Structure formats: C-alpha cells, structure tokens
Image 1 (cartoon, rainbow, N blue to C red):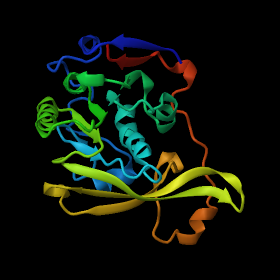
Image 2 (image 1 turned 180 degrees about the vertical axis):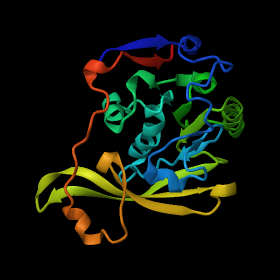
Image 3 (image 1 turned 90 degrees about the vertical axis):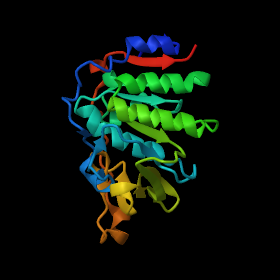
Amino acid sequence: MAGRMVVGSAALAELVRPASAPDPAGGHRVLPVRPELTGLLPNRGLRRGSTIAVGAGQPRRSGATSLILALLAEASRAGSWCAVVGVPTFGAGAAAEAGIALDRLALVPNPGPEWPTVVAALIDGVDVVVTAVPTTVSASVATRLAARARQRGSVLVPYGRWDGADVTLQVVRGVWEGLGPGRGRLRRREVTVSARGRGAAARPKEIKVWLPGDELTRVIPRSAGASAGRTAAPRLRVVAPAAAVRPLTVVGSA
C-alpha cells in the first residue's frame, strides 16, 4: 500500500481544508462512535470542539491503541477525516480492520519539534485529531490547542496525560482470550474502560468491552463470567480492501 510523503508542516495546507470550508460531516455537532462506547461520553459521541483524552496506561495491559481505533471507526465511516500524530506504531492495516477509511486518514508519525504547529494545522481542517502527548509539552501549549479545537469544531484526542480534558478514557484492566493449556494464540481482549471528566462527565463510569470483538467491539454482559473464555472469536472484517484503497497520505516533518 504505497503512500505519498508530504514533508514539513507548511505542506499541511495541501491536506487540510480551510476552516471556512463546508463541514464535510454535514455540520453535525456530535460525531458518532460505536454504540458500545456511547455510555462513556456525555454526548453519546465525539462532540465537536471537545477534548477527549485517552490515557496511555501500563504498556503490558494498556489496550489504548485498540480503544483509539474503536473511537475513530464510526466517525470515519460517516465521512469524517481523522489524523494521528506522533504514534509511529499506528498501522494502516489495523486501522482498516477497525473500519477506518484509509483515504480519509492522515498519519504524521514523527512531527519532531514542530509538534504544536502540526497539531494546530490539522485541527484547522481535520474532524478528529489524535496525538501522542510529548513529555515536554507545556500547560500553556496544551490550553491553546484545546481552545483552537473548540473554536474550529475539531475533536482533539490527546494520547497520554492531558490535564483539563473534557473526558479522559483509560483502559484499567485487560484479560486476553485465546490461549489454552500450553497452546493456542491470543485472539481478543476483555477490557474495562473507565471515563472521568468534568461537567456532564464528572461522574466516573466504567464498561467492559471486547477489543476486538463482534464488529470489533461488544459490551460484555455482567453474566458472561466463566463462559466468556469459551466464546469463539469472530473473523475480523477488512472494511476497505487493499485494491479499493486510494494512496494513503502520510505527513512527516522536515
């Protein structure tokens, strides 16, 4: 799957739409998410102008990348543009399996020192901007980016610690399924996702889902218990076959 490399933050002008251009999602203030995740969000979706942080968690049990994929999938299917900044391990193959339209996905794997400029430029023209949070980011820069997203009607999804987010999602527990006594392979994970925030999201919430599961995510009934380990894993469906995908735009720093 060949991609086109666009070098430097100045070249982002070729990718993003002007802020005054028509809203490609039809002006809807809330972008859809999978039904299983609606209970975690105060507007039951990704409200334009909001900041929805995803905690990185502990590497061995995180599941944060799978959660990000699940968050983006429905908005992407509905026609929204998405961008992922500063996550070099984010794969186009996994994105396609999650249902994300690759011809509306921009990847900026290594923004370098221009990170604030790159994120700001994408906020101006992309519906959902996911970005890994550099350890050196200052509170003032974070505040300005959140304010820019609020002004432009973009959804900012910081991946990592981000103080002041409207909602912070975190995978707090995870158990893999698929391994038998000394044999088998990992197929999917039962994860518990917590949500906390401010305003309408001030009351903490938790749900359990499969990542991936039936149609990639599924709420686990409280009675699933011991039978969950015997549930057959579904096949993953690639929404956009390679033959039908236009070249993926990859944006990099100079």
